[in-house]
Image (cartoon, rainbow, N blue to C red; front, side, top):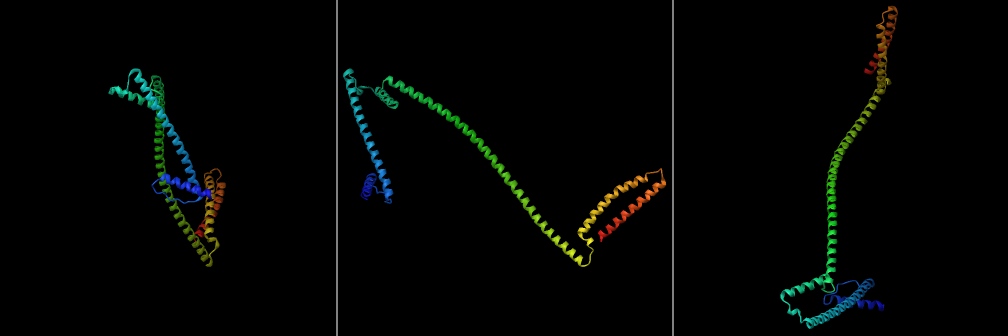
Amino acid sequence: MEAQEEKEAQVAAWLKKIFGDHPIPQYEVNPRTTEILHHLSERNRVRDRDVCLVIEDLKQKASEYESEAKHLQDLLMESVNFSPANLSGAGSRYLNALVDSAVALETKDSSLASFIPAVNDLTSDLFRTKSKNEEIKLELAKLEKNLTATLVLEKCLREDLKKAELHLSTERAKVDHRLQNMDFLKAKSEEFRFGIRAAEEQLSTRGMDASLSHQSLVALSEKLAELKRQTIPLKKKLESYLDLMPNPSLAQVKIEEAKRELDTIEAELTKKVDMMEL
């Protein structure tokens, strides 16, 4: 419990230090939030300590560089009686440019032996960057080409989809119309079936012969067609007998037999037809 209260106190002090005069945002105080904020405060404290160490190191190096610069300046004044203050305006600009170049190239000094490798490294970086840019341009051109092809394909697919939807709508309308016709035909078929059944029952109550029913008439019609088909070879046979000349008496007998057979078939056909008409 004391450890939890100590963490909450440390968190409160850290938040006050962070926000200063600004109000601290409201938050729910519970063990979880306290633990998270305490962890953040510890990380922040470690980071601040590291930053302070880096600042102190940089200050120390800056002091060392200033001392070294003063020593070199004094040495230069003693050896050649030269001071940057004695330079002309152009000389001061050249010196500042030299210093800025050394800083930009991150060389340890401004000697030629330091500048040449730095410039070579910078040139190599420049060539690598140009090469990388060319690769990126080629890749970008390829992507643009693929994108164009994809857009064209997407446009074609959209048009095909519209055509397919239009065709589907037309076919659906046709199917709906056919279904309506089918329903109508089914209803009519049922109506005719009931009508035929009622008519047959009515005719049956009146004593109609069963042979005159619809099914019987259909069967008789089929039988009549079959009989007509059978008379065709008989007629052809009769015509062949009519063309015979050698034996008139025998031909006459055959003709009479064929005529009787034909008359019998025609009589049967007439009878069937009369029955169908009734």
